[in-house]
Image 1 (cartoon, rainbow, N blue to C red):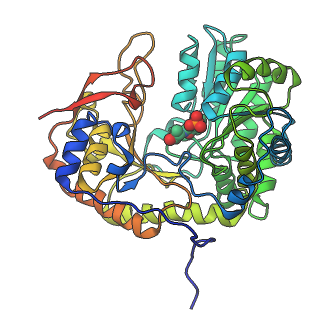
Image 2: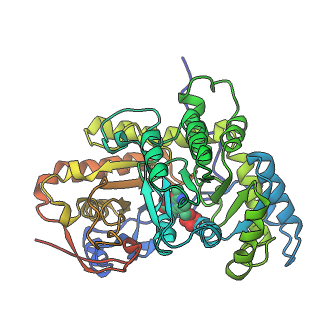
Image 3: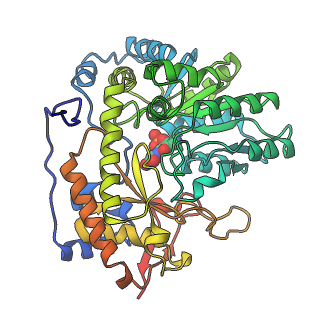
Length: 458
Ligand code: F0G
């Protein structure tokens, strides 16, 4: 008999989690203004809010933490961090930052000017926020097929070369860089193919536009290239990563994802001029350039995490768990962004709650219902997250409205996946009883989903 698939690690330390009653959850959610970001973590049974900073570190990472050099300048931890990044990504100039958005803040402070256009394959919300807060414009040029959740494409995170050329042609001289996000989080954790990375960079470079890789889930993207793209089956993840970055000019990274640490980020680049420019913003915002808002021990843990998570077994364990959950949802007929993405399952809330109008935020409503059902905290990646158009101030209802079940790395078992699927099935089975959605009572002008206050209608 063929042996079944199993995790490439075993568990050494555990943390208890607690169930609650439906009455408690009703009360807690009301106090949280129907926004799960406002819940206390102890009010949550299974936490799928994000895979960011929520992973379990390895014994090697914990051991490396004990060897952190906490010197203010020139710490050995920085040099370990820097040499690991140079070796894995092939980018020579490295600046640590306290997380991904801090890397964006430093780099964009240097590069983005009012009125600029920055195209990308669905910018993440902090990326979009850092562009729009500088009165510049983020334009999405992801392939339009990505918006059809039921279409099965191997690389649904790809850039539309046609749309890209159009934007570059119309905005000549006004595009400081392109943001290439791997995997494409906003469109469902969908990967970008090597061929598309290469072509995107060629087109951008022909217009003298540099490419910045938003790298949060770069290793998961490399896994999909290895398993789905012709010509990469025999290559190691590290070889694939090296090739991905050989085409781009710079990278911003949230180490909280694919470096499997609780906090950290960096900017890495090829161009010394950019490096000098970024240093000027790193020092006042993040700290001196050899620590950038991080402890020496954090830099050590990142270096080990980057090496470990660019190995196939680690990534296979991870992606297979997401696939396991997807298969359960298939069994129950629950629609999600197909095929299953790298870090999460994105349930198509518009389809599940098709009786609820956009104006009542189906994704946000489904998030509340799943929490009420079983204490599972997922996250809306939809109309709430999309914010308002900066010019018209209208809600942006043009994209998808999804419920993201985001799976932390090395944290939950497949038994937890069974509970998540069963809870979602229960909500799905009673979906027609959910007649009304939610309405906004208070919202921030930008990145409103973190703090928005809602009321339940009906
Ligand atoms: N880029 C992408 C693609 C991201 O998904 C994130 C964060 C960031 C940049 C910013 O990094 O959080 O370290 O400042 N995504 C998290 C999420 C928060 O839940 O998807 P950060």
